[in-house]
Amino acid sequence: MSKNSISAIIITKNEQNNLPACLDSLRWVDELIIVDSGSTDRTEAVAKRYGAKFYSHTNWQGFGKQKQLAQNYATSKWIIAIDADEVVSPELQSAIEQKITTSDENTVFKIQRKTWVFGRFLAHSGWIDKIIRVYPKQLAHYNNALVHEKIVTENHVKISQLQGDLFHYSYGDMENYLVKSASYGKAWADEREKRGKKASLTQGFTHALGCFVKMYLVKRGFLDGKQGLLIAILSAHSTFIKYADLWIRENDSRAKK
Image: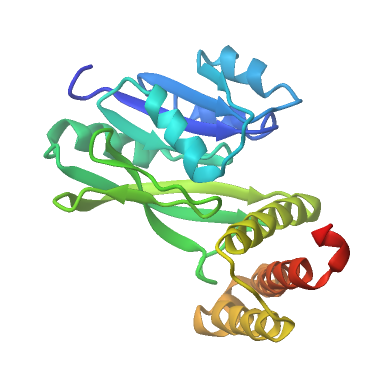
């Protein structure tokens, strides 16, 4: 394990369409680690074409646990955690290669991520985020969250911002959005139900309204044109649905049988 070696970790399920662009942008890393949760398309073939180490773990316990597995397989000093629908820009690649060579070993790095939604990158709407994605393997790891997993770091680490963008091609069409949204909503409701939490339709409505106001007005989603309006409406709808799902589980007697 050299001081500057870096492994890319990716989790997948049926990502044959997104994976080539992702892996093309990672040709510079020392090791590609892919942990798959049961793809039925050509994801494995694509991964192996790029020389990735491919592992199958179909006992799904959530995004956080799956990414922990991927990190455990990595053998490099550094980790770059990437989703299959993300692409590293050339500028970001250069920044990573330079920083892991010159920075202290107790430093983790944030990356600016821009998301492509229905034909454009959103510049507002709260959809440009800065997230830790590059870090020494021994200093950070993902938490156990079923969905919306986050990286947990040691208390003494320094956090630095990298130049360059990570491009997130999250939603290609409406079907893709609805499928992903339903999956995330179910995981959210599963996690809340496991903790004994309840929800009401009133909560669903108020949280949905708050989501729309925050995205479209507070975060100036109106400056993202029609895509900004559409994603604010869809996000509000998704917010209501996840609360409704949790409410249904408590009130549908057939679901308890």
